[in-house]
Length: 168
Image (cartoon, rainbow, N blue to C red):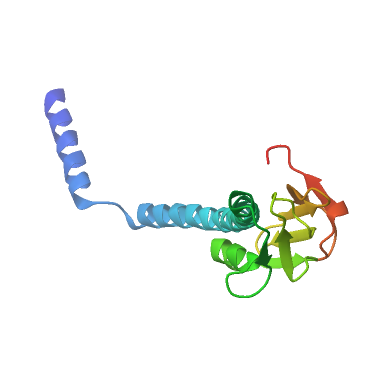
């Protein structure tokens, strides 16, 4: 007789599995998935904003280094427009989009035939959605590039507020 009870219990379980989930189970699953998606979207937006800032700052450094390399390779002085079409800041906008860029650069960055940067300045890149502000300092007289984190308040571009990155 106990064998028959076990057989009936197995039949009930199989029948319940064929019916599907209860409304309470489905609502709980939807609630948990919604919570996970909300957490993922919140942290994902901050991650994307930080990556936009990182990419833009590194793109600026690469454009400057590429221009310096061209001056050295061709043995002629060169200049790189800061604003406008094909300029330095356009490279950062293409790389990151939705960025805030402040700088104290001249209209053009000039390079000597031996690759020295004649004009210096600081560029600060930031984006909504993150507190990360990256800075790129072009120090004179050798035109050394330094990438770091901008720690100053406000939107001013100051080399004194640019803390050097250990990994840059």
